[in-house]
Image 1 (tube, helix red, strand yellow):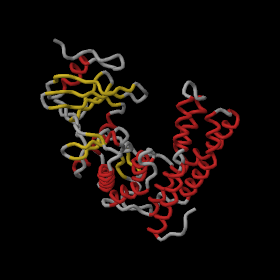
Image 2: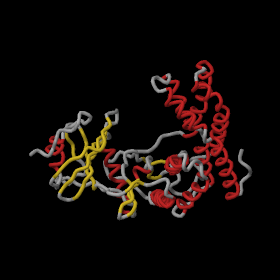
Image 3: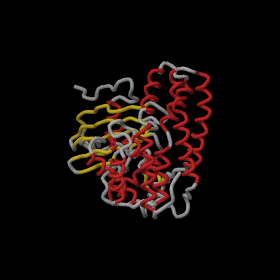
Length: 361
């Protein structure tokens, strides 16, 4: 009986081919293969659960080249050395941490059994935030292995936010011409979002990212950049971070904001300053944040990213076949304005009191 059934049409390789050409290069006996995920985009990815004589493994087809993979491998090894749990890349029979077949690159790790981080569980948030602080603190001294491509974020945050701020005005012009339900909702909430976007950009314009921004990793740290609940697995052995595809050297505040936004935008945890401060206190048990870093976080959380993005997409695609979806999204965003306003106000006061600064606009 052939246990390696042909994968569905959404896959790019059959299970037979995976076993014959990829998994055969590892020191494991394969019992079965389960499809987990396949994304056929410019960054084509595939994930499989491999049941073997040495336990469950995760086989992943990655979209980046070998030099980038060596950088990611370096970060994973470094973090494990510092006590931060991440699934290690299993060596092939040749002692290499990846396998190539048909111009595709594959990696194999242990499959981490456990549960995803729950944003409804405050203890999970505390643990995850502290782990992120430890990750950033532990980045000091990191150097990737030879032949790695050093991935460094090139984002100019002031420039990026300024462009989005200016785009809101052009979106307003489109809304006044459209006059449909979505556009009416956009216009009704335009001034609120424009005002907060302006405040955000003004804060960013005051920051000097090159001088006295923070500690020895505040401008150059290992950043996961997808530090969200699906990639935070609580197992019997503790918290594991998985999926380092987006990892770069970046400002830690970028990682922090990405983590926090997923929590604060949810209805059940909507812009809760109590949850925010609890998470930040846990982070700062490992790494204290500077005045400038707190200002960046404030600017990032004040900017109406979702309002800008959903509106941009609506007018870009003219809401084709998805008008109800877009309307539901903008209504959901608008329903959180009062809590968002209160959050920004309280956070500004917190920064002023903590750092003894004058009133922020």
